[in-house]
Length: 471
Image 1 (cartoon, rainbow, N blue to C red):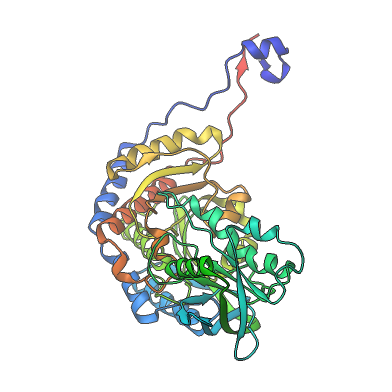
Image 2: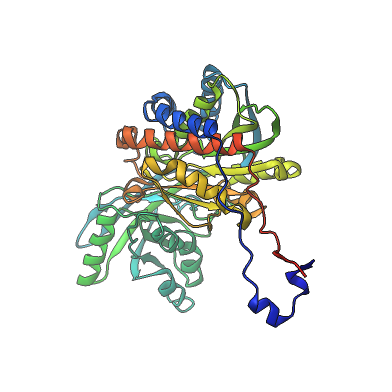
């Protein structure tokens, strides 16, 4: 018996490539239960009620704030009322930032107000604000090329639109200006930085967002303009120099309390193995954080609750994690990974709902190559929900990305985000924007997917075995 490692180069060329196992035969009883869970999910109101209650009774939940603390206490009560076997909080601390005031206006011959929102981590202007001439740039790269001191005493303005897409792929390019604006403007000697909001809408509503994944303070006052105000500023600049009055006041603290809220459906024969489904409990402070991400929390809680209500629990433990402080630096995801570093090997699958409440249209995975037949089996079960197969390149949502990087297999039920960035981080992110039928389809998909991962005992890390050739 020889392995491929012992063959000559010519022999390797002649040998057939290693293949994953054939598609597994899914136990008919497990499949039937998954289908029953999907049917129940399509008729479920628990998730919508959870989301409505969170956005109504708590409202905005800025990371580290009193409101986020109240959200954790609220969640503990709700999870216990839903009969989860365990519900607890894992606490951690974060650096804190909050807006106090934020105003901007064109001054001079064409005086008029501008609608802005300070970016997370923005420093404060001088008391009473600053008056400075605007210099427009078409991209972050354009601003970075500005010579040192060329913007001395001025305000940089990055006027770069975002591309709309179903999968949100335009966000990565557009958000770079939010994180890089202040530093690039400071390098050129500017007093402050303004950006066109990172969004795809044309409403007069600016989009909030942080400048740093670590929650660090920026080096300058920085704010996002509503898209129509960015257009207005660009048109004024075509007519000649424009001076803007900008007044941003922010409050900060080196440490504030946050935490992850966790609930579990305890498994049976494989209860030490964990299937994790998550969302984030915090939100930005302009709207009520309905699509980002109260909806995600309602979806995963409702899915787990359907499984919790079954007469027989699945083999593996299902862990629902409502992450804290995602928006200001992914603190909850990092804290969870650190707290559970010694047992990440027992996390057999992770999935996260954090892209609104649009219908799930595709299932991608991040499995070991030898486990691809399991992905195909899952995709086959979910197909009646209108979900198509995706590729195996999923790395996880914002909070579970650290788990994926540590080798935890990932499932990514991809939601339709065509209009997600119309609402994202704005005052328009409110409960009425959720389509109940699309929301329930999410619950159905998460319930079936989670149950399959918990009950089958499949190894989603499974590597492809080296092909063996008889001598």
